[in-house]
Structures are given as C-alpha cells and as structure tokens.
Image (spheres, rainbow, N blue to C red):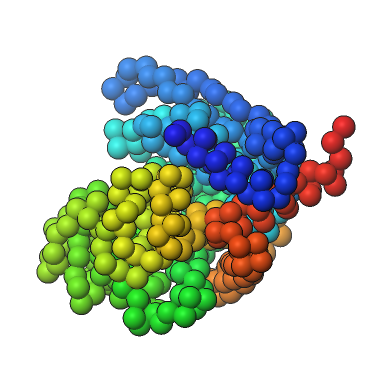
Length: 411
Ligand SMILES: NC(=O)c1ccc[n+]([C@@H]2O[C@H](COP(=O)([O-])OP(=O)(O)OC[C@H]3O[C@@H](n4cnc5c(N)ncnc54)[C@H](O)[C@@H]3O)[C@@H](O)[C@H]2O)c1
C-alpha cells in the first residue's frame, strides 16, 4: 500500500463513521494544488545537477496551509501528497488555525555541502515564492532540514516580497525563531504519553519505554520521559539498538550523541540489539520515532508493548494497525502524538506577526494546554463512538475541516 492510500484508508474509516457523502470525501481528500519544480544548481565541483522539488497544498479552509519541507532521496509526489493531507487533519485535531501542506526535494542531503544545500534551498524558493507566504502557505523543517534551511527560506522569500519572518517557522532562535521549537515534537510526545498512562491507570515509575530513533524527536521524548520517572530501557538509531534492563542512562546517551555527530555508535555499557528487535521488546510503551512503515503485518503479531505512541509519521501500516488493535494494543496516532512541533510553529508565527517575543516558560505552558485539550477531545470521542484513538482523531480533524468548508460555502 502506498503512502497516500494508507491515509485514504484511515480517512475512509473515519468518514464512514461520520456518514460523509462520496462527494464530500472527494472534496476533502483532493489537494488544492500540487506543484513540481525543477531545481537546477551548480555543485561545488562545477557540474550541473537537476533535482525535483514538490509542494502540495492540501487544504486551507481553516487557515494558511502549513507543513514541513523534507530533503530525502526517497521523496516523491505520493509521499508528499500523503503527508500534506496528514497535516490538514493534524492542525485540525489540535485546533490551530491552519490548513495542511507539505514539500520536499528528492536529494540525498548527506551528499551535499552546506553551500550546496543553501543553493538548492534558495533555488527552490525562487521557484515557489509566489505560492508560499505568511497568509497562504508556511513551510517548516522536516526530515533532512532544520533551522539553517528555514533562515535561507525566509531571507530568499523576503527578497521578492519584503521583510516578513512569518513566511516560515522553525527558524534559528536568534533569527526570528522561538525558544522551545527544537524540543517541541519530542516534548509533545512525552506530554501525551503521560496523559495516556494516566488514562490507562499506569504509573510512570512502572513504565518501561523503548524508543526507535534518536534524532530530534527521539532525543527530546527520551529526555522528557526519563525526567518524568519512566524507565527508558531501549533506544536506537541508524547504528543499531541499545538495551539496558535496569534503564538506559539517558543523559549519558544524549551527551554521547551530542559529541559524536548525533550518532549512538560506540555507546557503551549496554546490550546491543537490532532496530527490528527493539520493536518487539517486553516493554509497557513503544515509541517509533524514526521512519514510517516500520510496524507491518509481519512483525505486528510479535509486538509486546500494550501501548504505542506514534512519534514518527505513519510508523504503523494499516494492516498492522488492524492486527494490533485486535491484540488490544492502544495506539496514540501520529496526527495527535507528533503535533507538538506544528503547535509551537504556530506560536512562532504568532510571535512573528505580533513582534512580541515569547519565552520558553510561556511556550511550554501553551504547548501543554493545546495538546492536553486535544488529547481529552480525542479520548472522549473514542469512548463515545467506541472507536480507536486513530479513528477518533481523524473524525475530529475531518469534521472540523468539513464544517469550515461548508461554512465558507461551496459554489
Ligand atoms: N522533527 C519534527 O518536528 C517532527 C514533527 C512531526 C513528525 N516528525 C517525524 O518524526 C520522525 C523523526 O523525525 P526527526 O525530526 O527526529 O528526524 P531526525 O532526522 O532528527 O532523526 C531521525 C532518527 O532516526 C534514525 N533512523 C533513521 N533511519 C533509521 C532506521 N532505519 N532505523 C532506526 N533508526 C533510524 C536516525 O539515525 C535518527 O536518529 C520522522 O518520521 C518525522 O517525519 C518529526
């Protein structure tokens, strides 16, 4: 099943529950605009290379479209289209005034120098500057991009349209960014994981956690849960998995990654396991925070964690989702679990538009408020309708977008 089909599958399940008409389903799932552009740049060695860039603007009925920009060699239109629609439901679930979009460039970032990344980013903006903007479509970081790219995007866009830092979020804090944006997604995962534990009557101190992926999201989730008394027993990254029954020394792991180019390779005093084995550990909570599609119908029957928090986008394939649900596994879906990042992006945009700087305490407090409210709504809806948390989250998102679409009038 391709990425967009998977989103369509979850959408349809919620749409059935909401008794949406076929016409409304088509309207809500069809992207407003899909753009593919040529990005021709000169490499450092003087050779010309052409990359393909995408921006899919899925829906703007609730506000300007919002979504990250991914630099990865596997980026294609199907993936960007699916992630753009997920952003529409995500912003609606947490009830921030945005629609959904996503973009990407098919490129292996590790093969690029800093100057090459800058040239590619600025060239991409040259191609799409007319369709992005603080009131239309606001990009942000995703896999393979970060604050540096966002600063270049703002600077390049502003050359065409005048000074306006709100055109992009996830900027460096010293360059119109907001404190707490870097930690936001992982911290949000942690906040929501604790909410789930509370609702399920589990104590943090008795919760063993396995986290796949030790990048932006995985590190901050690990730190938050460790500081909240959970026992993080396994972590992993591209170099493999690291397990310790009595609990990983999370501050030591964070330090190790920090001084080793963000890699856990060589992290000592722990048992080495594979990334696949990590998913099947005997733990109370599993947090996939790396790639999509890692839990499949093949390994789902061996997943022992009764609780999965989807920090990554789409880590559980639809057929695996059915198996896990049948096994009684509770899954907090990506469109809620990893919404902390876009929520703090919204605060950054608000800060930029107000010209009034927020401090970290305010950011954390507001993040907690927004995510907690969304969690309660999704949880209550799931109970009322006797559906999974994923279907409830989709129902909440779809009904908000549908309502705005109808109120705007379709003529
Ligand atoms: N960063 C955000 O704000 C944000 C927001 C929403 C969703 N997400 C999603 O969260 C996930 C992680 O994003 P991130 O920003 O932390 O990315 P990142 O690039 O900072 O980190 C990714 C981590 O995953 C590891 N990894 C890569 N391939 C792996 C593999 N095959 N097996 C195990 N580990 C592997 C990497 O080594 C790294 O530790 C992605 O799915 C992303 O779409 C991120």
